[in-house]
Length: 365
Image (cartoon, rainbow, N blue to C red):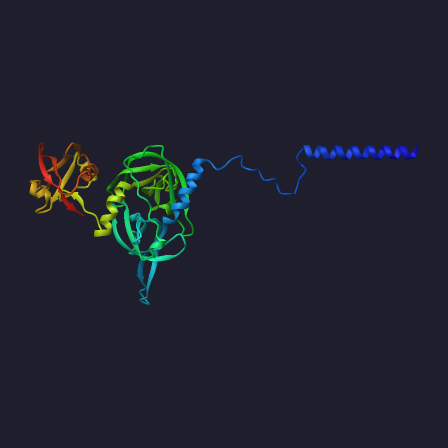
């Protein structure tokens, strides 16, 4: 009898222990210290993912890191040292060693260093700059086999909604990738010089400051723009990035390589600041001075002149061809649609009288 009771007690105790363990398991308090089982993907990478990976792996080697340098002489020792002025990204243009980036990346320095994807660093000279378009061209002496030029695309036929990839090398350690879509076309931003950059591409691909100067690529890996700016009141990335269109880049870079600067069409005049014109309720661009023998002078346009009462304003530009001109930006935009040597109709007002003169556009710096 005693043995039977002992067996029953053991069975009851075992049942209680089993119940407690099961309750703990059901409450999630049971912990396993074994590695979790690996969940297998049900299929291969998606087509979009694979395309992005392929483009990055194929063309990220074209993206470089740039450090802008300036010389400083110590006043006591008279030793000359190189002081970093800024950093950014850039990309290989050709196997001759030309590197393209933003002007604002190198504007504070007189030379630079370029670091390639393999970590090798080369001294670079600044071949040419176009501040009005935020473009600069550098030159390094690197083995051609290390230089992978990007295929050049076209920006005039882009569509809102197209996939884009922004590649940069912000820290000189490795390339970074962000993706998105074209969220707007035909935008306008101000360059370092204050002149407008037209037909700018707007994208929601994150473009951080260190990525400035890097390429914006389409899904085929073609260059469609240079990542140049972020629009944000605080200066932080707010999801709105901009890129200088490749059609502009492809027009300007060869000029910088050949001449070190670009020539743009102009009238051969100096103008009054918009702020002063607005304060004086003047609608249009006031000609302050015409360059003797220049395009405007030859066409009969006249600038302001001094009088006993102060300065007397004469010709005020109010139109270029079919475009109305209210401010300096309107004038710049109208001129940028033409080239040196074009003959354009310039509408001016002078003391309430309007006339139109033909001006042969000249080259200006």
